[in-house]
Amino acid sequence: MVRFKSRYILFTVHYPVLDDIDAISPSNSSASNVQPRFQTKKAPPLSDGNILPGGKEGNLGKDMRTLLQRRPAPDGVTLNAVNTAFRDAVNRNFGDLGAGLVRASVSLKYFSQATSTGIIRVSRDHYRIVWAALTFLNEIAGVKVMITVDHISGTMRKCEKVAISKNIKVVRELSGDL
Amino acid sequence: MFYDLCVPWPKAVTASSAVEYTRSTGPIPDLFRTVATLQALGYTTIAYDYELSGKIGSNITSPIQDDVFSASLPNVTFLSRITILLEDAAQSQALPSLTTKFDILAVRPTTEKLLLAACTSLDIDLISLDLSQRLPFYLRHRTLGAAVARGIRIEICYSPTTRQADNNARRNLISNAAALFRATRGKGIVISSGATSALECRGPYDVANLATLWGFTQEKGKAAVAGDARAVVVHARMRRRSYKQVVEIAVDEDHLRTADNKRADEKELQKRTKQEDVNKKNESLPRQGSKKRKATDS
Image (cartoon, rainbow over all chains, first blue to last red; front, side):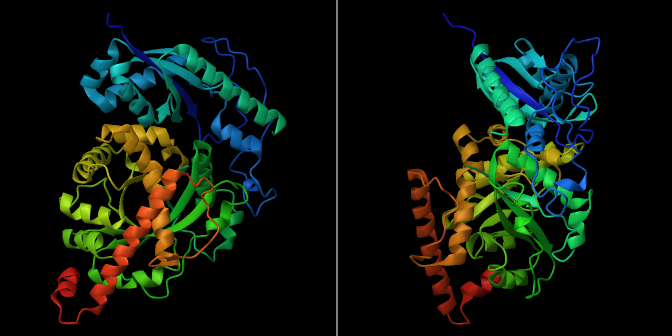
């Protein structure tokens, strides 16, 4: 029999220009009951002069660099917001044809506000449309974002494993500077 | 090993304005954010791009400070590059003097004749076109094929697609990129960011996926960000430091000299040797020769 094949896209939302770095733990919104697993140290905002070679610290702290890669979602970037945003992106960039091709199979399976990581399921034939739409996406609920796709796999389990291993690496960097 | 060959160096900063580095906001912190984002995304070599138009004096100094962020981002190799907006054939006279000041030479031709000159005779590394606007000329396979055969790559900057708002720029970019793919069949194309802010950067595999929308295959898309981009850097290095088959032994930035890289380097060396032979021949032609005159007609 011809099976229906799908692709699971593991993506991370980044906030490269978020100035208010203190707002890194999501507030207790009524929509989602997210408890932050760890509290990162309070880091000075990027716009302060102390990250530049001439400033107080010559090097960019490892914390800052890691936070540039992965951080909890700010207010407003919820599962529903991400859902609406990427469907809008498909619609805007690929029109009715693109939206129609993926409509039956696309769904946001997972999004965590603590890690800004999500998994989208699409049919194998059209996953590049959704992938490109994620690349074109630059704003979610008013927050300027950048999305990278970390892994694409035929099964959800592999995506979960990759997500876990990447998060472990981030936690190690933040806590132990290994 | 991923390469981003176009991060515009902010115009407001010159080599002498040391005070810029102590400010907390402004072009240098923005540049740092951009470069740090690129590093976090996995790019290991980044080239700062200085755009120049108009008459090029012989005393141009490079305003680019490659090593300004080297302490903060130690695993990244920084290069300097110049893009000359080619409006007049006389600008190409300045190319030899720029070789020593910038790592990579790029040219942005504005007319078909200048594109032909860039593809067939100018001694450069990269042809960069502003693909977010309608091009005033057609991209022909013969012209671009000549460039690729000489080892000169053609660059696509993807930042118009990720910059906000401008739909027209995005559509033009997609249309031109597809036309470029059709004219070159995917060979000799390099994709770089042209990012002026951290928001416009994208990861290398995401960029390769965008390339598949324009007609590339997955392998060619990845080569555009990795293999072909590396070839540009190698081509530039050889242009500066080699003559015929003699290559100066220097510390190689690429620690991974895989078999593929070695083969690619040998191909580059052959192309440069061929190019130097052609240059020698052209120089020795008498002044009244028709070849030289035709190429520099504007």
